[in-house]
Image (cartoon, rainbow, N blue to C red):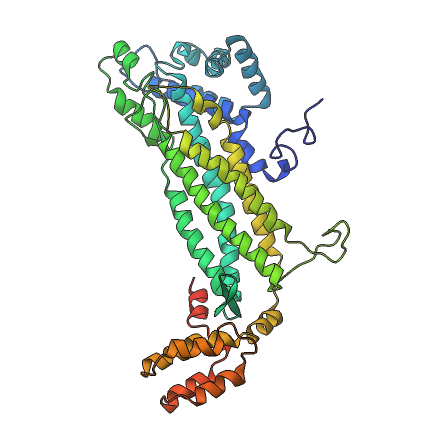
Length: 456
């Protein structure tokens, strides 16, 4: 069977492949091979730029440009050639070294230095740097921009719906009113904090040899400050240098990054379920798209499928992200290989994350507040004014205010304006306080909700 979207084992490469093209630049096998080529060439250029390594003559500008083109123009055919070499060597990183030796034959200066490709490196020097670059690039170019769209959409909703008073529900029961916009503002604030943690998560890399001590480096060139040399290499790529490692970079920063993604996903999972509930209550209507079918048998249905799709993908994503965050920082002694196959699933975890974010954003774009239904629901819940009445009674020294309102309202049907007004009229409180209580309505009892929503 030829590989296609229909024959893909994973839905991220099958059903959802068109929605995840932006991540292929970072997490496919071809992307990893290209990144390895980039790192190997960066290391060779750094070696050639140091006068303390006279065996590697400095490269001319034209040779450097030619080497850079190998990375910039790296093609699928190049990737196929690397895999062919790997089939012979049975080693993926060594295949990169041999590939570059072939490529650099056309450039005399570079050909003379091919013995220094992968000089003093362990494979993990290359791989850990590649993984950090892949995660950095995908975060900055794909994930954060998508998250910012969600935050921007929610902020717009918070402002547009700031004064739409609605019945709150604590424990699923009628509670003190809020506004629909304020509920959106709550999510914006949570996501902005979570975004800050994601953006601030460092991505570290090491370049210190087989067990992290520059052993081979010092035997070959004992007079070079290899720790500083490696630090310059790593930071030149926009990463943070980790000076203390075994053969592998310990992946603590990847774990922190994935924890940050998982935290964002948890916030969005909470949003998905709440919005799903508001759609079910009729607080939101969904814009209908021509040609879409909600049910194969019930023609009337407009299902909240975007939020359901988002919720499902968030669950899969967080299962992977949390497994990797727990597993990757653990390695037996100076190195075992259990991290290798796990790291190959980074793109799968972020793929499900991106799918979830995209579905959530599309779902938000279809929502339209059903203001009349929200207002009707709220106007049927006058019992929520028991809270402000008993609070004012407390201020003015009325005995047992909570107990009086509990007896009047708790578990009783038919509580309405007349019920509460009759109770208020009988209170021994100042006239101005009584007037404020009589003027209250469920829709007007929203505190600072509108202000808070507009301020976000």
